[in-house]
Image (cartoon, rainbow, N blue to C red; front, side):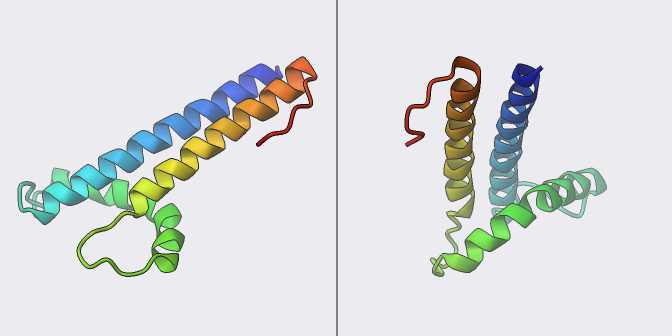
Length: 104
């Protein structure tokens, strides 16, 4: 049972990282004018990606200095998601295999 919960959490982290990558690519394509955001379908996809990623990206953007037009907050969020995934794997290993090695 515990394995299912950890599997679900790791899958959620994986799919959220995919959404972050898609949002970054969408933002770049819309910024360069390749995607027309006046199109209703394109706007709907962009709105979904924005609403899904902005709550996690906003605190990172508030901490980072202004780099002008370059936004590295998705990269930092992806690194944090990867760190959370690794921490989750270590916790699973500690619970299931009773190995109390240091987490870091």
